[in-house]
Image (cartoon, rainbow, N blue to C red):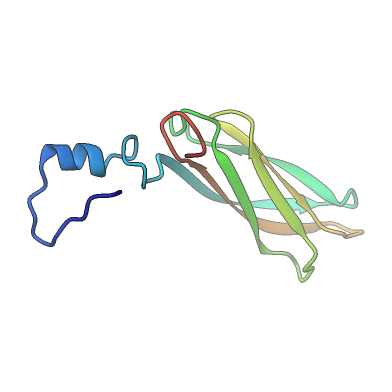
Length: 119
């Protein structure tokens, strides 16, 4: 259970080290990365786009979430993401189109603990 602090309270070194440290506090995300990218989908109906995470940000392969910011009026577009390492991942955007369509994808990658993407 996270510790409750009061306004004006002086925090001890232990409070800061244990309750506010993302590597040790179970209620905080250990690492995160967010980005927005464009995915151009041709007649193949889907595209895989590589994602690069900042070096040193993650110590385990993060969970990757992706969502469409806009889908060119096509409500049946889908997108998903996954990580392939601590510095790279992929998103796949799919839209049932016959021509070329560009969609904006928002990506969020998180690692919950120092050693695992999940807690």
